[in-house]
Amino acid sequence: MMAPTTVKAAVASTKPHSGVTVYRQDDSPVAWLSRHGHLSRRQVLAAERLQQDYRRARLSPRTTQSWDMVPAVGGRRGPQEVLNPTEAMLDARKRVHAAMDAVGPGLGDVLWRVVCEGEGMDAAERALGWPRRAAKLVLCLALDRLADHYDPPAGSPFLRD
View 1 (cartoon, rainbow, N blue to C red):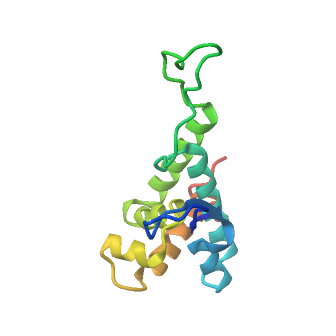
View 2 (tube, rainbow, N blue to C red; view 1 turned 180 degrees about the horizontal axis):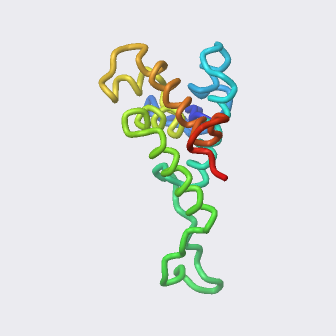
View 3 (cartoon, one colour; view 1 turned 180 degrees about the vertical axis):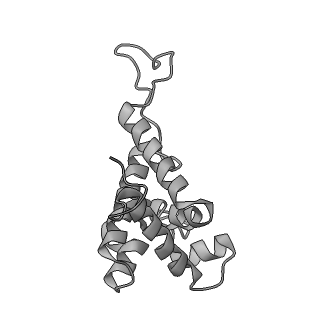
């Protein structure tokens, strides 16, 4: 799991929140909850799998220049046609959407904010209009459903043959 962390840029800036986004595994909300014994290993593995698919699918907004349209050799402009996304990216998008559908709309909101975007629990609660400490409970329920989606329990009627 990786969560964004702001690192001060080498050049002094007048903006208090300027910097570069770096992803560090050890300071994500899921990693913190896991370290403090609030999540099971199964929940953490499901969260990591969703986050990997989310990053592969490139569903988060871009914050830097897109290098998809690299100029042709000797030319001043890129190709006239937009490049198609790779099959791996499309497959990852399908997996993310299937996981979110399996979790459901009420639980998917907190899952997307905390696991996929790396938003803190307090920020997620404020954005969703929830009372304090509600996000942890709902996130645990969402991660249980997500884990069931990825690895259904034995005897489940949803097991594939």
